[in-house]
Length: 143
Image (cartoon, rainbow, N blue to C red; front, side, top):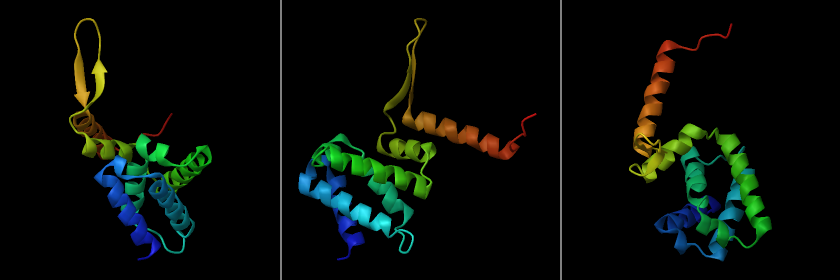
């Protein structure tokens, strides 16, 4: 099994539950991801695998499983490189979170006159609707 397969297997294990990741697995995930990212120009991994890496390694249990501050710093450096390299943006993050927890409250209005709440799914749908209007209408040039 090559490095890509090893990383995929470890990420699948991590997806089973963050408590499935021990210090050795966390370090191996980081090492494999760094190695594969360094090779990304000549042998790129598919974007979904990098998105999976971003989604699964952002959890506190993974981060605390990394051996020390230096390893967590190496993780953050890699994450920022991946985010920039694959063009991962706020819309992608919102979509990931919506898929994970669509009914969880994202925003809550706590005004005295009443309250309302909006779930990830509601906000995601609203963002998509607004984006569609912008795409349909086009972008106006600034005066």
